[in-house]
Every structure is written in structure tokens, then in C-alpha cells.
Amino acid sequence: MSAPVYNRIALIGLGLIASSMAHAIRRGGLATEITGYARSAETRETARSINLCDRVCDTAADAARDADLVVLCVPVGAMGAVMAEITPVLKPGATVSDVGSVKRHVIDTVLPQIPEGVHFVPAHPLAGTEHSGPEAGFAELYDNRWCLLVPVEGSARAPVDRLRKLWEGMGANVDEMDADHHDLVLAVTSHAPHLIAYTMVGVADDLRRVTDSEVIKYSAAGFRDFTRIAASDPTMWRDVFLTNKDATLEILGRFTEELFALQRAIRTGDGEHLHQYFTRTRAIRRGIIEAGQDTAAPNFGRETKP
Ligand SMILES: NC(=O)C1=CN([C@@H]2O[C@H](COP(=O)(O)OP(=O)(O)OC[C@H]3O[C@@H](n4cnc5c(N)ncnc54)[C@H](O)[C@@H]3O)[C@@H](O)[C@H]2O)C=CC1
Ligand SMILES: O=C(O)C(=O)Cc1ccc(O)cc1
Image 1 (cartoon, protein in one colour):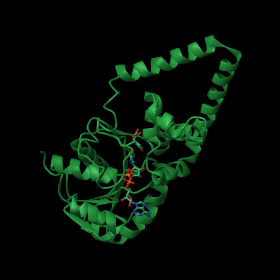
Image 2 (cartoon, rainbow, N blue to C red):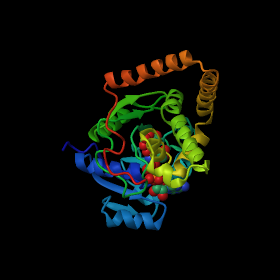
Image 3 (cartoon, rainbow, N blue to C red):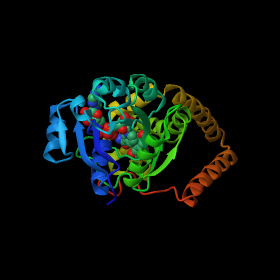
Image 4 (spheres, rainbow, N blue to C red):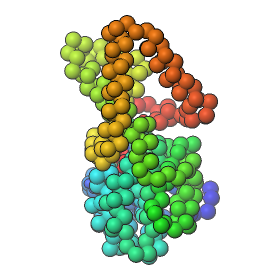
């Protein structure tokens, strides 16, 4: 246990990411009080019944009032509207942060609403599972995973360093990155791969010659990973693609070109092309392992529902 980094932390939106934060904050003794807000009465009730926060409030404003740190943990497309609900109650010197998977859109919708004297430090933990809701969280989610901080132009240093301390206290390794670069990197490493997984599972579903039971029974590891990813929250991922449009389309354009080249190599029997391509991609995987970046699976060995 370390000393608290903030007195009151407010978590707005009590899903997987916020509930994992609540557990990790408590584990590390990083706040004296955690307040929470969720949009639906049912989620608030569940959060209360599992004692997720010290106080679960019925409005976002009540949760954010007097908080030293307010973290927006809702889908990217809802960040601006949620920010509007809390703006009037933010105390001077407080920090607003978020955990959204896309950063430019969040900055464009939230930053103009930040009152004078309040700090804004966007963040993105690179950790998750395909599960959602207040009961999906666990304290170890961020252990040894990256959390990227994306300070806005002209941001004071102290609030950034303080947020870094919080994420490090939750077990994460922290780095800083510019918003546009973040969105491009994530389009390559997360957003496009998710879309490809969604597509592959959709294709399997469309292929009526292969029955559902065969798809499930004979799922090899690669396809199983696709089905896990494709089970992720539809609202969250709809928002990711609608708000990181340019970078995702750029990467998907390149992906399609390479796919066509591989398709041609298969059709023409160009084994040399295929072998060279797979040799290059294998080296990338080996590089990840050598750099020690192949951390535990996102679900940490927990049973995942099919
Ligand atoms: N799930 C993942 O693997 C990761 C998600 N993120 C980001 O974290 C954020 C939250 O994601 P999760 O916790 O996974 O989602 P979740 O689906 O588990 O929880 C989202 C919460 O936001 C609330 N919400 C949804 N729409 C809302 C609206 N219009 N107004 C107010 N509240 C609303 C929901 O009721 C729920 O409490 C998203 O921005 C996502 O991009 C970041 C890293 C990983
Ligand atoms: O579950 C997985 O495989 C993930 O990739 C988790 C994840 C999802 C979205 C993010 O913005 C960051 C991490």
C-alpha cells in the first residue's frame, strides 16, 4: 500500500475499465474515497451490491462534485455529453481524465468544455477483455500493461505526473504520446485487428455450408481468438471506428492491398512470395517476445465465455 495519490476519485461509467480501476485503486490505497456513476439504475444497483465504490451516485454531477480526479469511462462517442453534465460542479485544481480508445476525438469534444483552473489529462490503458459491465473488472487488469498519457498542448506538468503516479500505482507502465500518433498506432495495433476479427467471425457465420456447431467444435486457436475479440462491446467498438475514421481507413486500405497481393500469390502458385511474407511477419512476433512485450493474455487466464 502506498500513500493516496488523490483524495476523491470519481469514476463516470461503471464498466470493465472503471470497475478494474476501482479494484486496483483500492488494492494500492491510491485514493481516500472512490465515487461512481452509471447511466442505468440497474448498473448502479449492481455496483452498490458488490460494493464497487464508496458511494454510487444517481447523477454524474453528484459523483464528480468535490472530486480531485474525475475519470470518464464511457464509450468514446459519449465523452462530450458526459463532460457537459459534470462541468458545472468541477472544483478548481481538479483533474479530468478519460480512458477512451481514441484520443483526438475525445480531446476535441472534452477540452473545449474544461473550465478555467481545471486540468485535462487524457489517458488510455492498453488492457481489456471482451467482457463489459461493473462485475467484469478485476484488480490485476493493468498489471504490467501500458497506459498511454496524451497531455494536451500547454498542459501543466504536475497534473500529468500525478496521473502517472496513479496508473503506476495500479500496476501499469506509463508512456506519453501525441494524440494523432496515438490514434495511428492504435489503428494498426488494435482497431484494424478488431475489425478484421469481426469480419472473419461474420464470414464464418455467413458460410452456411459450415454449421454453427462445427465452427464452435473445430475452432483452432486463431479463430478462437477472433471469436473472443468479436464478442467485445458493440457500442464501444462502433464509437472507436466512427471516431478514428481516418487512421483506421488508412490502415485498412494498406491491409486490403497486401491481402490482394497474397490472394494473387495463392492463385498463381507464387510460393516464394508467400514464404518471404511469412518469414518477415514471423520476425515481428519474435521481436515482440524478445522485447518482453508479450505480457499475459488480456483475460489473465480467466475463463472466457464463448
Ligand atoms: N474494453 C476494453 O477492452 C477497453 C476499453 N477502453 C475504453 O474504455 C471506455 C469504457 O469501456 P468499457 O469499460 O470496456 O465499457 P463497458 O461497456 O464495460 O462500460 C461502459 C459504461 O459506460 C456507460 N455508458 C454507455 N453509454 C453511455 C452514455 N451515452 N452516457 C453515459 N454512460 C454511458 C455504460 O452504462 C457503462 O457503465 C471506452 O471509451 C473504451 O473505448 C479502453 C481500453 C480497453
Ligand atoms: O481484449 C483485447 O484483446 C484487447 O485488445 C483489449 C483492448 C481493447 C481496446 C483498447 O482500447 C485497448 C485494449
